[in-house]
Image (cartoon, rainbow, N blue to C red; front, side, top):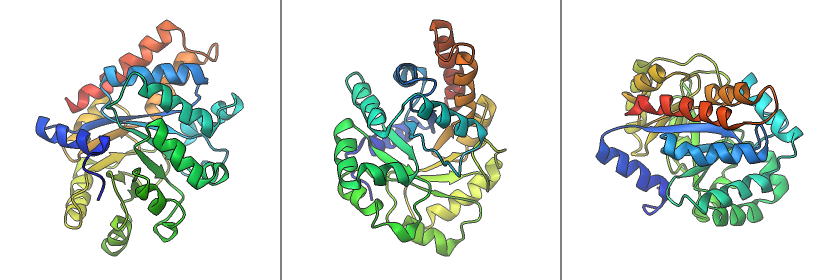
Length: 274
């Protein structure tokens, strides 16, 4: 179980009292550039984000669809590093102490950074959780157990193909919340329906009291609203990343009009859980 004093737990407890699901947007650190991704990060809470996922760009993002892959490539080309991503979180925490921040990505950059050093720096920066898509349950000693010991939640993904036996294993060291992938495919693919998510949630609740978030393929306010009836949180990634790209494509940067467009898009999505 996660620390009851964690930002993630406080957030879900407050939302349970409010009687609604969380809205969790995903952005790629450093896309379209470091300064503008920080500006987007800073405006997401006022646009309605309850928790925020920040992508750690990586050169071989096997689980990501084209939109998030391209965002990561743009970020890396612009010089984004894991250290700069942690610096983003540090600066965000100077003005926002309550919104949970989850870093999502792959193990390779953390391994090269150094696990112990990374966990110290991530905790100091104000990171609340990790989603590392290429570390299976069998590799818990690599990062999951050390992260939990450091007070950082280790959030796992399960898919429609995860059976009950595997679910029990996956849940063993999971904390924060469980991320249910609504499709058996890459990010940005079409989502499964709310009924499928309800059935999966019932299986999860039989083994765990962790909150359940659903993501992959959720693109519109209507999608968010439909999924919010079936789960504790709704994640939108590719659609928001595409909106950021659209608003910055001409110049590689977000001007005031572009930032307003991104904020309005996020706010429209967030309205689906309210």
